[in-house]
Length: 138
Image (cartoon, rainbow, N blue to C red; front, top):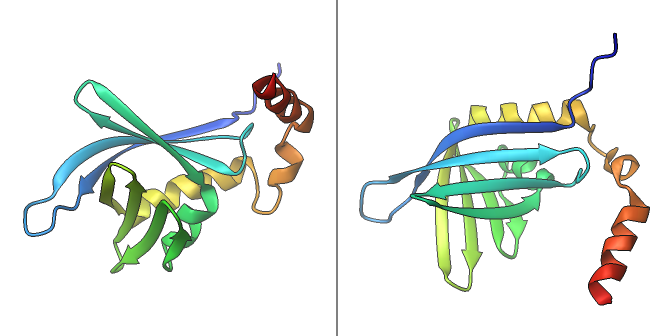
């Protein structure tokens, strides 16, 4: 009997929207990683009936648990021993979300069980990527 090897990791987590000068607000979120897109993590934030999805590098989460990282729209850094902050910037504004460091680290560790660090390029289907790019230009 053959057992399918999982190619996806998801983790439900409650983040806290950091509101300067006020109490933080809970934000349910789902972190997802798919070995077919080995460099990326998808973070889906649930706001009522709406979902907002951000895609950013897995390395940002992995490194941001221990030290400040990021450039551009996404920055991640530790806040003490138990919290990691994730700042997201868009034309509509900026949000800073606090997440439990242990949960983020556990999620990242599970992604590395699927695709090891520095092994991502072996999991990219280059022909499919090129076909998608060519289809977008058509």
